[in-house]
Length: 329
Image 1: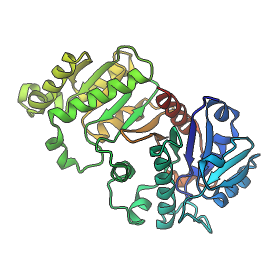
Image 2: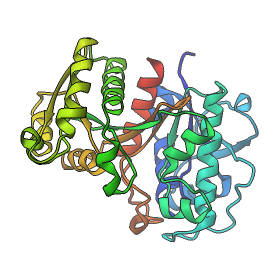
Image 3: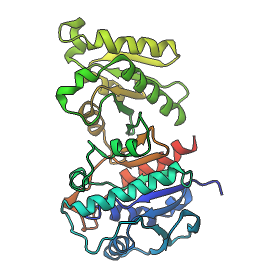
Image 4: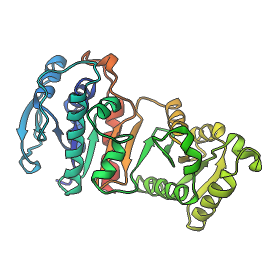
C-alpha cells in the first residue's frame, strides 16, 4: 500500500525507449518495487510488445486516479498532442521528439501536482528534441523552466560513486567563467544531501580541479585558488566531508578504489568520462532539483538497436530503483 506511484515515459518512439519500457514492465520486480504506469502512446507500446512477444496488455486512462496497477495489464496515459501513426525506426524525427517531450513534460507536471512520487524517463533524442522546436540546451533546462526550478541538475550514479557537475550542457569556452564559489558550493551541498538521502551517514565528497594538475598553485589558472578551494572550506565549516581540489586525472581512480562516495566535477565531460569508464551497464542519470525525482538511462536512444529487441535494461532498472529510493527519502 505504501509503494510509490511512478510514471514511466515511453521516450523517443524511433529509438529503444518503448522496448525498454516493455521489458521493464514485464519484470515482476517492477510492480513489487512500485506502482507504475506509462505516459505514452498506446499504439507504440503495443507495437513494441508485439515485436518482443511480451505478455502485456495496455489499458488507456485519462488520469492517474483511474490506474489499477494490475499486471499484466498496464495503464497508459496519453498526453494531448501525442499520436504516433507510424514509428520511423532509427530516424531523427521532429514528431518523435515532440511526442517524447510532451510525455516527459506531462509526467513531471503530474509529479509537481503530487499525483506521482517519481518519474522514469526512457531516453529521448536531443537532436529530435531541438527539431521539435524546444529551444533549450537539453530536457533538464526545459523542465527547469516549465516548473520554475532554478537549480535543476543532473546526478550521475554508478556502482562505484555518484557524480554531479557544476556546469552541464554549455559551450566549452564558457566553462571557466561559470566556475564560481557559490556554484561549486551549491553542488557540494547537493551531492552530500543526495548521498545522505540514499543512506550514506557521512558521505565523502571529492571535488575535482578544473585546470591541469590542479592549477599548480596558480601557474595554470586561478580557479582552484579563487573559487574552488573557498567553496570546499565553506562546505567543511558546514560539516560536509569535502576534499580537494583533486586533479581530474586521479580523482576518479581514487573514487573507484573506494576513497570517495561522490565526486563534484567542474564540467559535463569531466563527469561523464569518469562515470562511463567504470560503467557496469547499470549506471543511471537522475534529474534533481525539480518538483519530482526523475530517473533516466545513462545512455541515449541507440538507433542502431531500435526495433531489434536487443536493448539491455540494466540502466533503466537502475533509474527506477534510484528514483524509488530517493523519492522515499
